[in-house]
Amino acid sequence: MDKDQYDQAATVFSPDGRVYQVEYAREAIKKGGLAMAMVFDKGILFSIDKSIYSPLMEEDHIEKLFKVTDRIGAAASGLIADARVLVDILREKAQEERLQYGMDPDLKTLVMWVSRICEVYTRYEGVRPFGTALIIGGGDGGGFHLYETDPSGVFQERRATAIGRGSKTAISILETEHRSDMTRKEALDLTFRVLKETFAERPQDIPKGEEFHVLSESGFEEITFSEELERFQELVRGLSEEVGPPKDDRNNEKRKDP
Image (cartoon, rainbow, N blue to C red; front, side):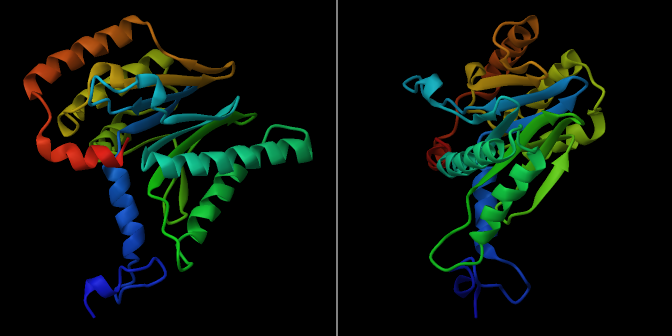
């Protein structure tokens, strides 16, 4: 049997033990906008790429960072419609935990729950794996924690991670330069460096397509005006001129990451 006879459903293993539908879902994630997060000494810094490739698009309508509770957020890449479904599941579970126990939900419990849903969608006929990955971060009495989910249902706790277009380069930099005791400014500087290094892999992006959010003890805060952000925007404008306009063959990829 050839490959085409093994990739018709997520319930079929190939002779070498692969589930092609899950691998295809991961490919959809790789084509999505870059989403990144890292733990620093007093919180978590999220960076998302909205991939605003047309001046006709309403920036505020594009949502890739989702607030689950006041102290838990999720950044997504891949098929954002799938991500919204999983985020709704997270929100419902969080409300259920709060009503049942009278306290904020446990982050790992939420991650395990949504990962279980992802895994279920890999072993039943008539469904497909979710074509999205989530970076879920939150704080509790033990500090701040980050988890990354996968369409297979696997999840991992990380101190820093990235998903989407350019994530391989981003993770390579984070592995060598990230520290959990970094200050907020150091985390921002590292984020800007990663975005600079990955710019050539995503030349359709423009400065206002980047968004930065900080989750701290006081809750969520979007970084809108700062010397660091202005410096980054100037840097990206210069890189945009060097790289030039996006190629036409990226149109199909853009449609997959609205």
